[in-house]
Length: 91
Figure 1: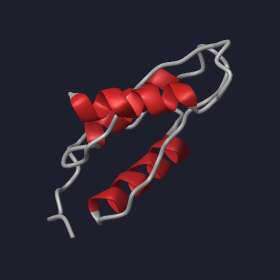
Figure 2: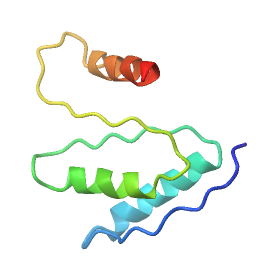
Figure 3: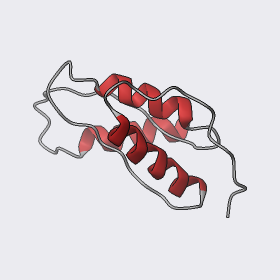
Figure 4: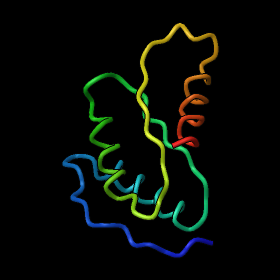
């Protein structure tokens, strides 16, 4: 089990207390040795980037990958995630 690392203080997002609490709980599980995946998927301009920035600011002691996507003619919906993982392992 990884040593416990306390989360840095990052101001919660206004109006997003539930989402921030969910992210904080997820990060705590990761610090305790669980693996997890976070996917944010919704309409444009609703605050997904702000939530990711909040999560990144709270993620001390946690390794993560962050990517962006959009409409794609890709035949496999999982192929972009695969390439993200391949790039993440090489750098």
